Structure formats: C-alpha cells, structure tokens
Length: 64
Image (cartoon, rainbow, N blue to C red; front, side):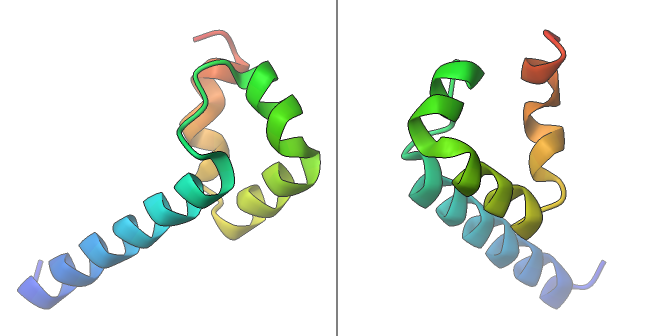
C-alpha cells in the first residue's frame, strides 16, 4: 500500500467516526435504547451512508 493510500484511508475512517458521533453522540451500548433514542430514520440514513455500518452492530443485533 502506498503512503498516500494509507493517509486517505485514515481520513475516510476519521470522517466515518465523525458521522457516527454526530448521529449517535457515542457508539450505542444498548442497541434497542439507541434505536429508540435516535429514531429509525437516522439509523436508516446512516446504514445507507455506510454499508459497513450494519456489520459494526451485527453482534449486537444477533446477540453476539
């Protein structure tokens, strides 16, 4: 991997974390409480914005 590629990857990851922080405040510990708090619309938008988003919470959805 080139240095430029790695730097861009870090920037993308930072933007992703910023997006999640803006939507959720913090990463939700309790999925159901978080879903009620933020609402289904914001969750759906975040899932569309980032396809990997669902994967991050899959262990919560499936109960590990």
